[in-house]
Length: 54
Image 1: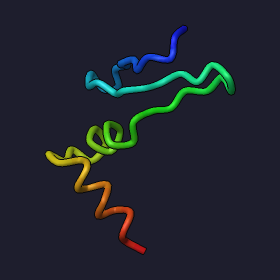
Image 2: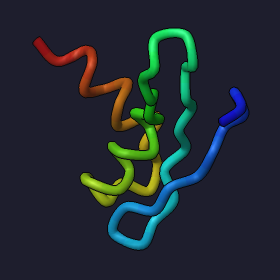
Image 3: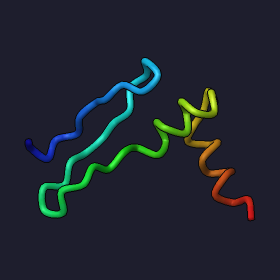
């Protein structure tokens, strides 16, 4: 598998991911997952606001 970004489906929506061969782990796009789970039209803004809440 190469280091290119791949697309997987979750609840019929696309989630970007990347495979790190060195440590053998996947990295998923938090913004894509937040967008799917929250239903937000602007997941980047939603994630930014969520990070500020303490």
